[in-house]
Image 1 (cartoon, rainbow over the protein chains, first blue to last red):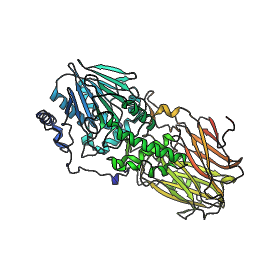
Image 2: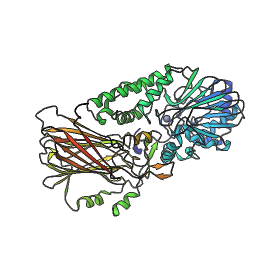
Image 3: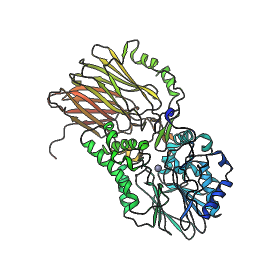
Image 4: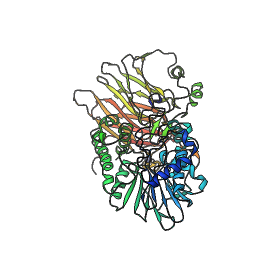
Length: 335
Length: 275
Ligand SMILES: [Zn+2]
């Protein structure tokens, strides 16, 4: 995206292609949708499709909402990342809360349409605003807010920037009530959380997409929530370490899972195929950038050519690719 | 600084910041304020400055993708044959508008295109300027507008732990010209340094990380001065400089660096012989 607000698209665009209702054809999902709408009076002020009411049960007790392949805008209200919850016999864990308090509240309503069990854990897979700003809607439940042990530092240092920028992108009304909530439970070693008859395994990762990525596994169904370690369709964004990310993906590729849930992409995917496009994208950048560094080329030169073979393979390539190359170059020139 | 700084400090990271990984800027509060007359007076008094006179060209990206690492290049076209005295780079609305000042020495070279490139932080929508001083004392300026913001306070280190490892490592490279008859060589200096600007918050202490940045870089070719560079925290993390120098006998560069803590680092292009 451009940094010039004069060129930034503002104002609601036509609510087409939003997938509203498209996925919710089962009776249960229709019910969830109507409940969510009925219980969120504020919704009528938001564009009709900026709503998290299309959660789908992808495995027993596992529900996923799919975000849109877009940059935050008033039209989408910040609904651009996947958000999930897992229901045990004694409680519920939320995994990522979407991009505003309003969207978080809708997610909470979707949970309440399924179960009245207490919401015990709100887990953030990493620091990015489209995954954390819905946290505020769960304060009333007094859950443990859970994240990688470096999440608190990452959010703390970026707090003001994230608030200002997201309010500006989404609009102050749709963003109202959103706040940064720091984790109350920090994960430094692999840790299990008990939801009653089902356990979640939380594994902090070395610097990859960010320096605070957490993989959550529902051990009962062997479902992996990869957060933004996995992008599909939406171009990956590097905000940590390209080398570290490639390594983490290699490790994930060795795993067996019934399904994985990406941070951006369809609700579920399968290993190892799910990783392939992203691995190809990151390798293309790393290979091109390394070659150009070896040839004595500059950062500016690299940003004009490196990784452009991937241009047609991703949505939002124009918004993020040059930035990714810049980050990769600044990292790889120190190899 | 005086009045200019008081004025400028109001714009410190005022508006715009990182949205997720993307950077999106709100309109700056003082977009219309022209700070240049003050800056200019401080730096050059009432000396005349010719603008866009073809003596100096400033290149900035059309679309800034990451305000914390904005590549800029200053070119002095080959038709300019004069020896260079100094080059000053400004970003009007940065907390410290003076980005870098180079004072050239005898090994700076002449007789071909000369250039200087680095990567800067851009805190607010602002003009960037390169003011070149020739041997005869004449001043020439090129100006570009930067539509990027949030580089100083908002853009935090991607991996603060990694940033502090290897602090001070200084890599120096030289590049011979494509044509051996060209008297202008180019060089690169990379310095591993977080260049903390004092505006990044440390969540553990709830205090700002103290400013610590590369202050001075001296580059010599075969023992003769290419330039000394006075640098500020407007230079990005891991300061990176590309520059030209005049061809010498061995074309080996020696680089000495001092940061604001008074710690000195050194680098050289010559590879140590043996293993
Ligand atoms: Zn992310």
